[in-house]
Image (cartoon, rainbow, N blue to C red):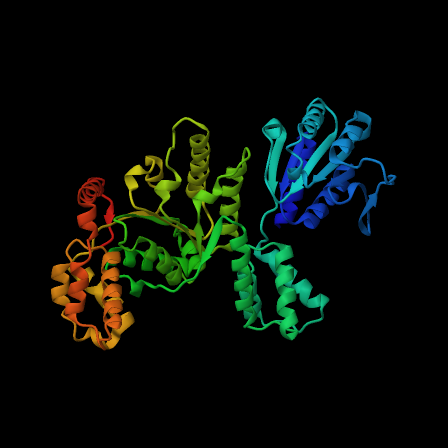
Length: 510
């Protein structure tokens, strides 16, 4: 169990004399329970400070945890800095665990960081004490970086989620849930904290007093909110399928093969198949790279999470790396899923250069590479790039992605399919009257996005003029008014195409 592993790890850290253990979590009550059990096992008293209550000493017995408020007069100073000044004494701190909450709001005060650093030095010199900083916001002042070890309370595994649901059902004396629905609920709750799961269960229970299939939709809606609030990952709605992609049959067939493995993971792994890692899709803008990421998730029948690399960058030392760990941890907790990283070349620009920003990016890149190399979870990464040549070569070597595909401008057959998809989606009855051959001849060098734009513009023009149907001449007029991608980026596309060919990347089209 994750919680048990966390307790064992904290025991080791305390025994080894680690000065500051930074527990990065929203679940303060869960952290309290873990610290209480650890304090009993190492036989140490606990002193807590938070902004709402000031100092409280913990009393831990067989009935549980009790927090005792210190008796202070109305005019006594119960601020963090004053509490630290009073407690910064070897006799007071010996055999103690000091738990500080809300600390991120006070780290701008140099007196606070100075006293905590002084306590850290004393612990390193032999004082048997440990400082726990418990907060949902990771912000380690540079002065405390060397003293601090960051621990994150991991997401619940399947067995723990099952236990939370079972306990809720028993507590409210609800009718037992059918096993198949129970299993679906466990999967749906993956990636949420115990606090969030209990809240959603309470919300579902308040609807009709029981759990039914319709509650899965509620769970997914609430889960989307939780992921959105994380500020790093976004859950994307799945509307597109492989049928919405014109051409790229080589890539689509490869994804279908991976889907067979992904949808039968247990059997595949027993057979000796490796866990799928992911795919890097590079090439011409507007030719279906992002569409393939969405279609892959639909094909695998799993959630699609989009990672915004720009949101990973934080203000404090270690914050960006912690955000990366948080994003990876959440994706793995939700797995099986597809993790989509769009325009990955922009995310890792500046690797190996000097300067603070470049150094942070280099560390993030290192974390990402290590994860991709060692990844054992059912998190399938789809990375898309417009210019793969800007990517560090370490990302392109075997072992990171299962395959790298190059997407070029659509050929005649692919343009025919793209026209068919976009016209039938909007004006199905008009499609049979359209001269597709003429349209194909007039759109050499057009990207998939260019063709979609032509169809949209022509249909809008037809509607605006009051005509009743879409004709070939309407589409030809829209083509005449459209500058294709090959016109706008002729030299860049020619160079890109040669480079991809020379590097022997697999073509997404046959």
